[in-house]
Length: 326
Image (tube, rainbow, N blue to C red):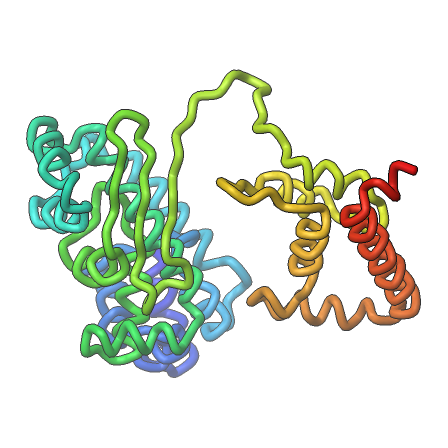
């Protein structure tokens, strides 16, 4: 059954109106109206959170609306036979305009010579990935949403609505409006090495929690792995420091890279403690998990004391190498 018909029927059964549904989904009434009149295609379930909110508000079985939309979109894809159209010229101008000055002429020549070629698709996709990641992470951040709304002279609901539309777009359907709303304000500049395709994206510090994102495309032999830092190897050899680290945490520590400074075992131990501290992450469920685990606090204190002693021993041996060798 058509998802729009199901929503409209459920609203009638509950005696509710479109504005009630819009308030529950935290979008504008106009957005809901366009969805229900099919002037706007339903967003993909994996790119939005409105179906969960609508599902709960309409008291429907969990996941029903998402499943219906996925089925509709599968049917629509089967009917599509025409290849996707390339970028709007205005979108291309925004992308080129954000390119670092000394590289801009070269990039423009490549883009113009090969309309929507490999380089243009790669660059646009990466810029889209970066801005989408920020928008998705900040979707529940009211302060960030209000900052975006103020930047565009919009209401909170209007800003949230256009973000949901942006998250639902893809490389072949990105619009000029998406560029002016997200790519232009979020991205300060970008640069790319056209030989290696190494890419750097600098972001607006007022709208992004990170200031730079780097992409590397490096050819490696199968099984090849970067050499581990000596400090990391020493960290692994000291159970008092590395004990209790999960595989995921060790993989993170192993992949840390440094250009000039060489980290010590204590550096890796302190990073590990930061990884384990729930206050360093946005997911409040981690904090609750740690609170429940406080029953073993005495054992934890013993582990901490043991690791502190190990650090002192390590520091003493490092400062007095002759004494350690005697």
